[in-house]
Length: 351
Image (cartoon, rainbow, N blue to C red):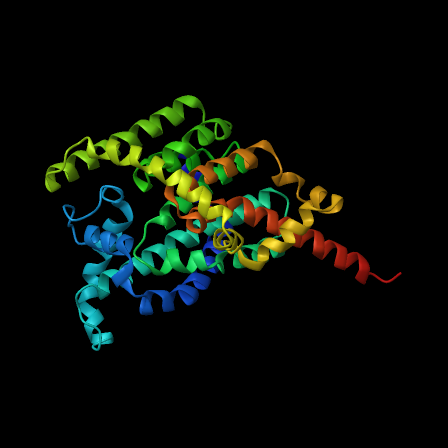
């Protein structure tokens, strides 16, 4: 409660509202065509989450069956939307369109909130407001942001969990609420949160001590257990299906490695953040650039990158999982932009 009270302080609220509003505006424009024109016929993920939003659990694959938070929010929001949707867009059948639109709104709001955590972390790394604004808009222009915000998916919430975790590491004392929120939501956001958990436990300890972390995690795990029990009972599924499915993901590792080593896979990796990857890579290749990037070249960032790589290998979705590194990349790009602005300012000064 104390952490929430601090977050709601007037000045503190404004510091969070600006980046959230900036990210939300960007995403609503960027992701609308994806929501409107995407062909759902070949996407099992999106169809599964649409079923979850409708309260149908038995026809959803075990991999996605328990990720209920975003679908539940979309399902609730779709009910009032459905009452007016046909009047605004009579040419679209009532069916799933209101739920698709609800996912679009929920995901834009959540990914915008994730962007706000990236903004705050980059500011704490030492970048100016202008440099961070440029970096945030660049990272949110990624095709994966458009994909995640515009479609019935749950990655937006998981990106928020990663963003809260990295922000908490950057902020330290005073960010206990961020660690607690990540631990409460993370287990239900995605099962792969288990790989982020050791990193968060260690690097989040300055923000929230071990006792607080254990208490928040216990509530999150208890909620996950309750959801598993309810859904397994409703769907008539065996409680051991989750373990069997998790072990089966090991088969994705070799496939992911072969894919990453292929020309197509390399292109997918480089396209995660698009051409904005080049300034960061160029900076890493120069002593001055490495000095500028020094705040994000620590063990915390290296180990978080390793966590992201594990996600990539196990999921076989190299690009979409690689976007989980957005909190660090935003800070890195902001620092590069800050160095460029400083250099330009020095050159522009009269001699």
